[in-house]
Length: 493
Image (tube, rainbow, N blue to C red; front, side, top):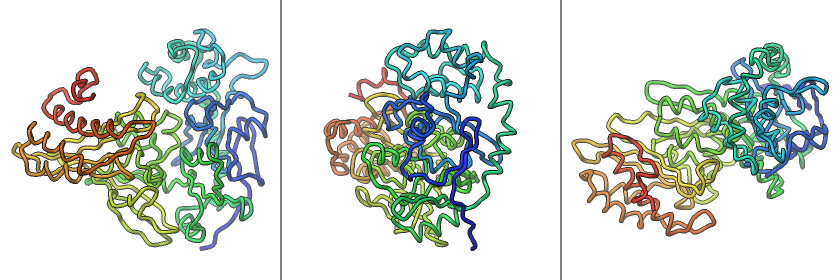
């Protein structure tokens, strides 16, 4: 196929078109804003997508519609921004004009003290306000999971979020009123060409299509694939790793498709956690709490399900749940595709069943049997925006009081996400009662030898895994569904 190549990236920054031909593959949006454009409203706090001080909004076209999302500028690479509209806090209010309603609400409710984190909160609230002008407290808290503040205790910020619509009219907001015009400008920028910038030692590529991506990766099998950059961003900001050449995928709509049929759901590998959320909640409601606790909203807007799998981390959030559900992935190299059951994809620490030049193209999640009960538990030091210590996924089917099938998978318990094969063997065919559960609990010692790190000790992890099976059993005996913390202290400690 004949590929047209462009050697510049083009995007709109606030109100102006930007065209760049000389961009480092490791330049972050935060550094570009503060150093290259002298826009100092966006702050650097953690440089790892954790604190939200660097939050900006990025608008992009998806199926012809313009959508704005909050993202962490500290780990978003400039090279991924082709065809986007970046909105920073600096553009919200004109120098001689009134404050933006979100800013005014923060002032009126005394929601800012030292002020360092305030721009990030403003941008997160702005993104929420555009999607939901009268959010509930729960919706506000969820939108602010990825924004940390040491001063105010958050109560005043929540009051500010509730007050925005009493100050301004969302219909008159520029990003709403001018959405059609901005969408038209972005459509012109998206010409379908491959973008190549830099030399062999410092180079990045934006393929023109998924077919083009397959060809580019086959020709550059050692390239770093960047989808959401929620992990790769830290390779650069924390470990100063050389990741060139880079292949960016954020712009490829073909990888962001979701299909639902009679047997299950297929997620393109580029589908973000936020994009997958409505489908997950509708068809796999047992995963809702897990999905709500993946990073903060900025991370869920950026991070991808396919990237979480391809990364191969033993503490990745989605693999234990997806393994328990019987998920499979499609791997592609050039024009060749093959399907791998997800549990078989993870071979050893840092090693997956993926050939050079091969990539994860999609994830297939079958629907749960009517006879099965599913649960997922994520155990962390803090409730929100924290990395897993132990994550357990349970999918156990029952018939006539016995266990007809069992799939139990854990993250944080081994070098890879792993099934509890011996535990499953004890359960299958047995009566579903406390005696069976306790026999299965003893089998955990045959399945796992966890390690000790700063997140948890080996002893704690082993005890938690055992207690999660006990918890699952108690929940199957309760008509109230999932047990809450105050009702599970006896089995959770």
